[in-house]
Image (cartoon, rainbow, N blue to C red; front, side, top):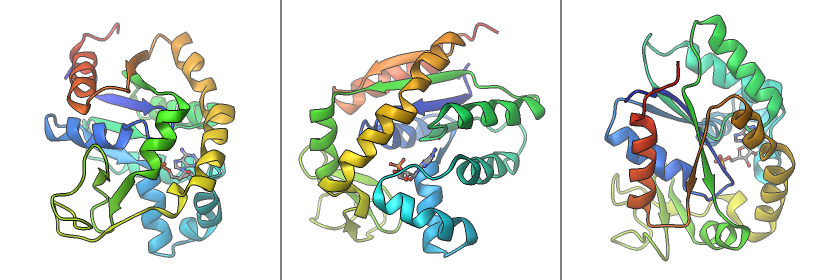
Length: 221
Ligand code: AMP
């Protein structure tokens, strides 16, 4: 892979997490999901989890300083040279600035931002059909990717559940947060020459092929 420090940007339900896991299987890149990180902190009832819980459950963005602190601390702990895919972080311009400032201080930079394009009707349909494993967080879709045995994770045998924030009333709040706070990052990263878009409304293997081609393309640096 020529591009080894990557951001996956896009609305909830656009397939960022699924693709991050697929790409990780085929590369040495480590998938790092901000949503999974927060849900783990909430389960462990840590200080961060306690501060984040109400925001996550109601579909609002967690304040920038909380998420930025936990994500940059995680990146700092990685063995040097580790390539990674940030799934769901950054989600605001101040988060992007903090991330890029933190990376620069470690003599690192972002090599590509992959923007997942998907329209609202498809987003809602995908999210209401989403189920995730309670143990390993592997995502399923009741229509397009059902588990082999209903309610059971194919990979680890864990029980599948619907995330509390995947209920229809919360989805609208999450979409609103995406449009107001996260979508401006598309133009932000385009100005930096980092943006690469993929049409996410296609079979997962086609989206994956496009992403692999982006990651294998030479960087301009
Ligand atoms: P996700 O699993 O990426 O859909 O994230 C689930 C929830 O975690 C979001 O709706 C937010 O409440 C919170 N969250 C995840 N990433 C961020 C972020 N970068 N900034 C603020 N809140 C976040």
